[in-house]
Length: 156
Image (cartoon, rainbow, N blue to C red; front, side):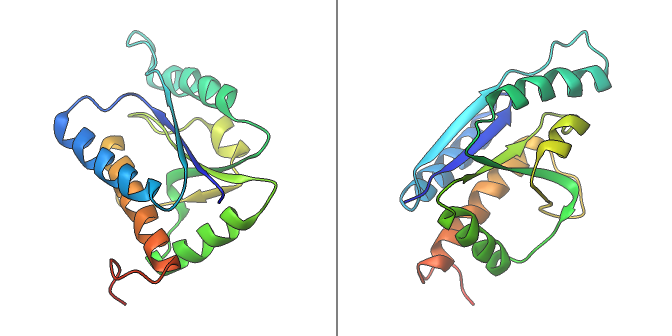
């Protein structure tokens, strides 16, 4: 069974985000081994673009050769839950890589990270707080795994 890796910027500080993320991470881990890497938020004294660059450098340091980096960005490709399940199947079946989903901090991802990613997806044309995007991604990946296995979580 192939694993799924996540690289997030910042810890979830509020209880409701933590609880929701833990709920879906636990549910997803029943289908795939999951690995989480948390990159520290950039120092507060930096300008917005400098924060992106600082966080981006740390994200890139955490990428391993077998990672298939997938950026979450509002300008990425949108897809249905079924289409995500199909993509996840393809990514997870490749014996040389595993999907590595990346969500940036409050100011998104640096251009260096976006250029390094092999796929960029969007959860919606709208912008969400990165904490909510993390929970939405985890839920959608759990839904995708349920679709793959024909479980009743997703009502088609």
